[in-house]
Length: 484
Image (cartoon, rainbow, N blue to C red; front, side):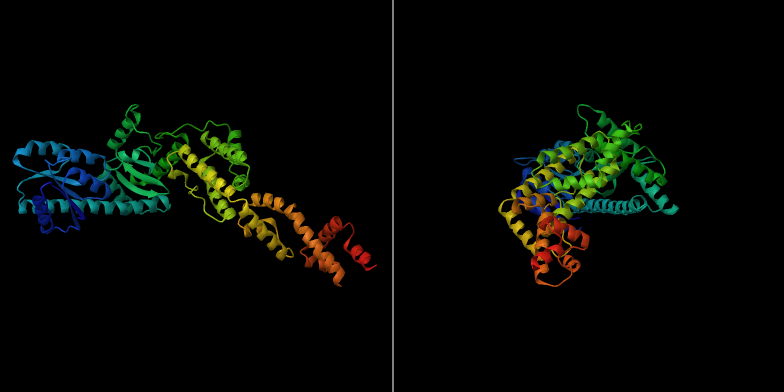
């Protein structure tokens, strides 16, 4: 075992018990000593303790109070009470509170050794079971999540393990890691943890207790988990998992637990089509480019519309997930940084409203951050942009290339560039090219088509059209008039 905690107010007795533990022949990595229950609770909150020996009568917090207080902990140590003859009635009370057994004072070396050996065997069995569960979980992941078929032998082994763990019938539970239902499932058989969801397998007794808790309006739990129907054979694991996963998805949007099949979606097809359009890549990209602009009202309106539609079940789950995955990639492409939360994994959050609040908070903070970086920083970027354009206007340059070069939002760059230069991007580049073309027409004998190509036009007709629009005459006429 790793850690043993000794709680005893009398120093000599405490040290004596610690020494006997270290010399009992059972390997222990660490023995921690505390003089009272309050100090012991501090240790228990910070560390995982395998075994705790505690006295009953102690100042500040006695043994009974300590055992009661530690019930709040997720992981509780196996507890042994150390008592005198006069404390026997108290020891019995502690055993009702979960204490495994008691040792009479003065503590005998052989008795303590016997207890330690028994506990070591128990803890080893627990660890072996956990290891087996992890192996079963891996096989489950292979069978269910990787969509691979398992042999009859493996399925038989899975079925045997399931029956040993939960009985002849089972349910699959899929929940977020923050769901209240997690407390009720802390002692259940956890199959896997993937994509922000926990997957459990529970028997009929645990299922009935869950439903009872969920139905208790005053003292019940609030959950957005998905629970499958009841199954018997291991061959149905995949079916049960996918059913629970689908119900978890519906629970996320409806914000209430789903443990039975719901009727067909009653949302009119036209509204679903409108919801799907909100997930179109072009629309998502537009919402990405609104971040960092002064169009705050439009930004809020666009994203609120998206989440309202999702909450009304106008957006199918797969479309919702795909839109958020694209948003994550598009944000990184546009701003050259990761979005401050993993928006591609909404089920890390218990419900749609919980995810929406976190997502919109991140969007608005990013918007404010980009807006705060205007002013001098924006002017510096415009200077860099103009310098880059003057050096590269002869190439196939465009605004996306330049905004990317100075690491600015495309839409924000367009507005900032016009404010700084007095021209839009296309006009600015065109004027540079025409100015250079005029110079070459006057100072060289190059053909008109070659001059157009040299200043950045890959189409001679496009060059001549732009030249005439700016200068008023064609390149040939300009050259001839200048020669006169």
